[in-house]
Structure formats: C-alpha cells, structure tokens
Amino acid sequence: ALSIVYVDILTFCSEAKGVFRRERRSLRINIGVLAKLSWKPFEQQFGKTIDGFRVHVKNVDKEVSLSHMVEASDSRALVRAQKGALERAKKEDAQRRIIATIPSVDNYAQHKKLQKLRQEGTGTWILHHGVYQKWYDAARSSIISCFGIPGCGKTILASSIVDELLASTVSPKPIIAYYYCDYAHKKTLQAETILGTILKQFLVNGRIPEELEKQFPRNHGEDRRMLDASDLSELLCLAIQQNPLTFIIIDGLDECEKVSRRVVLDLLHRLQKPEKSTVKSLISCRTEDQMLRSFEGVLMVEMTASSLRDDIQLFVADSVS
Image 1 (cartoon, helix red, strand yellow):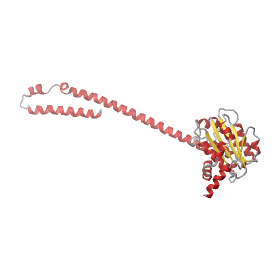
Image 2 (tube, helix red, strand yellow):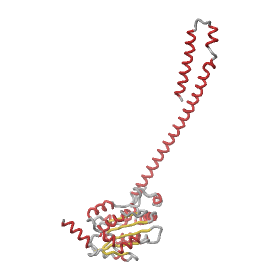
Image 3 (tube, helix red, strand yellow):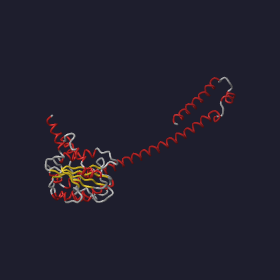
Image 4 (tube, rainbow, N blue to C red):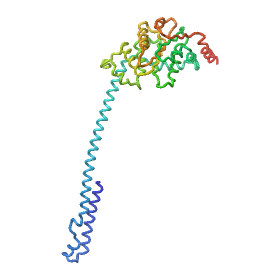
C-alpha cells in the first residue's frame, strides 16, 4: 500500500508538471484566455488523483495498524513459548530429582554382557518345556521358578528368556522388566536396588508417567532421600496397574539376604492377586531355596543334565571348532 501512495505522489507531480509545460508553450496567448483554456479547476484537474491518494493513505494506516497487531501477537506468542519452555525445564528438573532418589543399577549393561557370553542356539529348550508354556500362556498372573545347582547356567538362561520376551510381537506390547543379582556386587543384592531397577523400566523415554508421578511421596526429591522398599513396592504396584501385561524376570534371588528375598517375594506374591493387569514372574535360583517353594501355586522347572544336554553339546562343539 505504501508503494501505491508513492505512485500517487509521482502521478500528481507528473500531471502538475504537464500543466506548467503547456502553459510555457502558450506564453503568447492572452493570459486571461490561457487561464480559462488550460488551467481547469483544481478538483477537476487533480481530483481523481487526490481521491486515490486519500484512499491509499487510509490503506497504509490500516496496514500499519495490522502490523502493530501482528507484532503484538508475535510478542505474546514469544512470551508464551518462553514461559512454556521454562515450565517444561522446571518439570524435567523436578523429574530428574525424583528419579535420582530411585536406587538402581545398570541392568542393561549386565544384560549386554550376558548376551556376549551366551552360546548361540542355547537356552531354547525352556521355550518348549510344558511348565514354561503353561506359565507363558496362562490368562492370569503366575510365578515360575527355574532352579538348579550352582554353575548350571541359570543366569545365561534368564538372559535368553529376556531376549525371547523382548522379541515378542504380542499386541499390546507387554512390559518386560528384568534384573540380575550378582553376589560380587553387594548393592545388587539389596531389595531397594532390585525394586528400584525394576521400577525404572516402567519409565517412558526416561520420564515418569504423569499418573505415576502423582503418587510419589509429596515433596520427595527435594531432600534427596532415597526411596525405601515400602515406597518402591507401592509405586511398582501402581506402575504395573497401568499396563495390561507385565513380565518380571529376576535371576539369582537366592544370592540375596533373607530379609531382601522376603521383601521381593512378598511383592511378587501380592502381584498375583486378581487385578486389572496380569503379571508373569520368573525367578531363577538354586535348588535349595526353600523360601520360594513355600509360596503356593509357584510353577517349577528344574535345570537337569538331560534338559541341558543339547546346550552342552552346542557349547562343546563350538569350543572344539
């Protein structure tokens, strides 16, 4: 619109210049006659140009006003965006403080280590075992124990089961939470560490789901106090209830002290009660672990020499070759 106004000004100047040029060529004509013949009334000579100029000036005013409105709107949008970014940063910082109070270990690193140790093709026998299939196919929550003597490959087998579950194409996809107890690292044998590590596997992209975050102890994280077993048990129950199907794999629970084993087993037993979600728990342990055997309804799979025969042959053949 502003450029049109400039054109109007140039047009007016050009028309005025034309008038004076015509006058100069007619200087010999009587001045009175010249005024009558060549100088039309101002409004008649330039009225159309002036009217157009006025309209275009109004358009410029409208555009300036609109530009100010857009600028103000952009400023408000920028303020809102900055406020939103600040709120998100504040929330993320609060979540980081809360997550920092969940005791845990890097179970993923341990799982990757076991994957490298596992002989390809081994551990598949458990998938075809009748008791395992009964546990896997059950419509309700259940617990299965894979037990055997020390050194028979329980941990490697547990990692194989984890990978098989992770590769499942079941829809909706279940939560697969796993944990490896390691007698060489005392922290991994504490009930709080076991429950906290499992709980963290329910986080979505490292973030606490909103419905779960509301249940954390009020103001927790501000004093950096670590969550205890009681807090973790309650939060884990709430997290599990948000998912229709959950698999929990715990290897070497018998390595833990009696108190820690009791805490974990009590929770797993509690999760077997009818709820809106199904929980399938698998525990690998030594044969002599009587605490697990004391729970009613626990399915048992023993790792015997005959069940491991094919795995041993694969291992020996690969070692020889």
